[in-house]
Image (cartoon, rainbow, N blue to C red; front, side):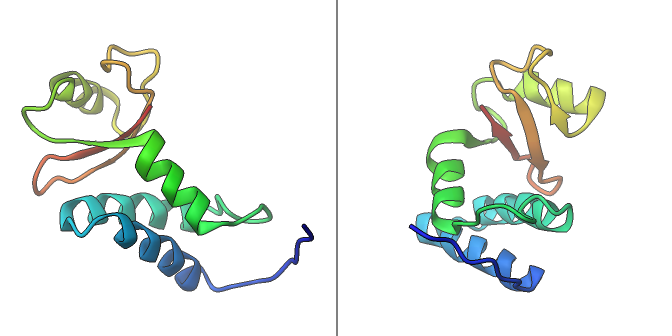
Length: 116
């Protein structure tokens, strides 16, 4: 397989990721959490200069690496306590019920997007 370098707008890159998220779910709250995460990734240049396959990125995040925690879910209270203490980011050294990274938090409904 050969590769081609190209430039695309950050808006289009984001749209490609979100189109794939919508392939997996129509839950607006889940879409919003992934949207917040991918918007930050795009703005921070996470995908600059590397291989970009939106299907592989989103499929792995959605199916394998990320989960949505809602109030009442196992581990929610521990993740919320870590978030209240430190905010987003690495929580692998904290008592976060096995989660390693807090990606996003939806203040409106209290949902978290966490990474294994």
